[in-house]
Image 1: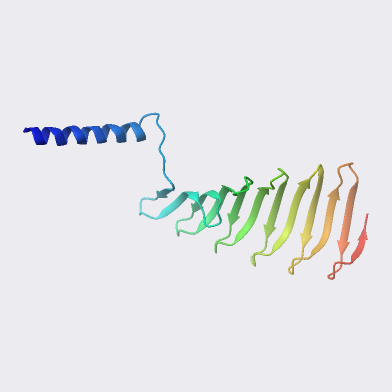
Image 2: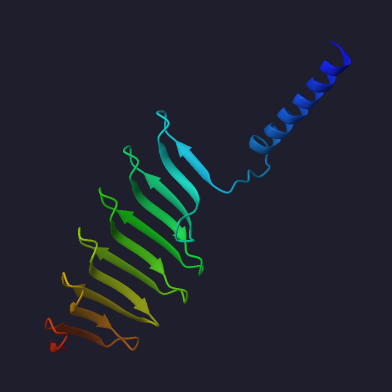
Length: 161
């Protein structure tokens, strides 16, 4: 082996050692985005910034359709979305910037149907019609007082306890 070949071999061995340390050792692997492929080469998962500015893990089905997203909004609020077969959000769970949780269930038309939330020690379940209007709500105030309210289409209170 001549001097040039020996030098190239040393460079190659140094690169292999650096790769081994970065991927096999206890070092960190850094990238702007991670993409996981299945055996057919289809994208099944992605970890990185999404189009809305959130850092997210997106999981896809065999057809490549996103079915679940776990992420953190730029505001620092975490969220989880489960999507229907056509990619529409059907279940959302998030914490607002103050740490209060909420769950939203949507219909196949992507309109909210049920909202469950907690805020400042009180809780509420709201049932929402196809036009996005709250039609019934069950709540418990922070002092423990329960309430049930029903509303007409125009939002006028029908009755409540």
